[in-house]
Image (cartoon, rainbow, N blue to C red):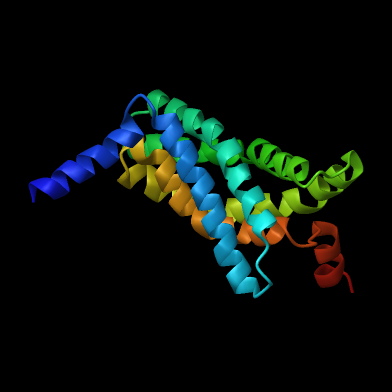
Length: 188
């Protein structure tokens, strides 16, 4: 039993200690890759290594921002108080358009899109990403903020993002556009 406690303690220290941002960054990059691999399996496409690499780099690039954002939220609000949890979730949702703009922008850079292609992708995919976020993220984050200790916040987010990561990997790597979806489903 001591061995298990020691292992748990060492694992926890990776997310609490001096190098927590590094641990969270590596975790986020790995989760980005895993989500893409699962997505490609679901899509039943021929496996694309470069696509998985891009999703891993995307997760790795954006993770430090998440680390410091959640650190800020946890420092600003009392942990596990219902009203504090609601405020954290609300702020997290309010910042999502900025977050997804950065996320999608970095993706477009990794794909070496032109400025015009990037703007088209932002206009077409950003509303879809934000819509998924508004539907699912508040529930995921309420669980995260109420059940997980602060040092596992980014890990909790990455677990939450696993479902969203599959959706976003599919969305980012396929030709979706909110305007085309509206035309297809809402115009007579």
